[in-house]
Length: 288
Image 1 (tube, rainbow, N blue to C red):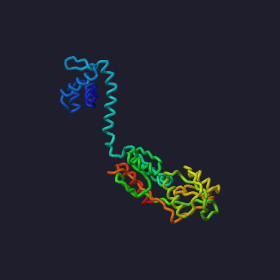
Image 2 (cartoon, rainbow, N blue to C red):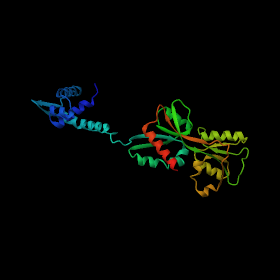
Image 3 (cartoon, rainbow, N blue to C red):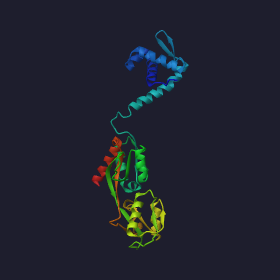
Image 4 (spheres, rainbow, N blue to C red):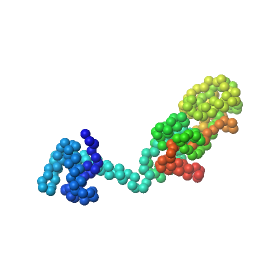
């Protein structure tokens, strides 16, 4: 069976609404013979007569009445689709993937401003590790990522967003690392874990048990209990209450590698909505 065409439905509904083929052709700005031909095609396609014809008048059959009830909804929806972007305001569904550190401090102060400026945009923000974000960009699953950079990839472009420092977290009162000390870290796909493990190895403080815990709250609780050490982004520490900050020792070793966070998109170009989102982030970073 050949598929229905929107033009057929539009002409059918126009005839029903105006009463004649001639009036429908005037409404649609086409010749009457074209309307007649599309109606015949439609009836042949459906295998039903939609009109009874008496001289120059058309009357809906029961089948035609049912078909009009369904067809007018399709035509109205199609008209709505053509007007979807005609108001000159941003509209769409923007999917952003981000590292957890971006969602801790950076995005909470920025997303509300973007949504207030673009109320027609639906935003979806996902939290994923670095490697997953890069794969999702390549596969077109997200429009924009906030991840470690700079990015050197032939399929990606990037722009600096903010800088993330890494802190060494020790039990209260401890001032230096202890060889073989237990370590609490995120999973192996976490870039900060790789940085910290490389730093420990460089310092010669390996050999301790490493617990994989995907919760900063649990990690901090274990350090507070004196069970070991950890490495936590500064943005996470900034969300802690003052009482909790005094129950741990925090250091920022100058040789512990931090990370620049970049807005990253799939080439050949960033989408219009993703650019608006990036501009919103940038405008706040200039003001803050």
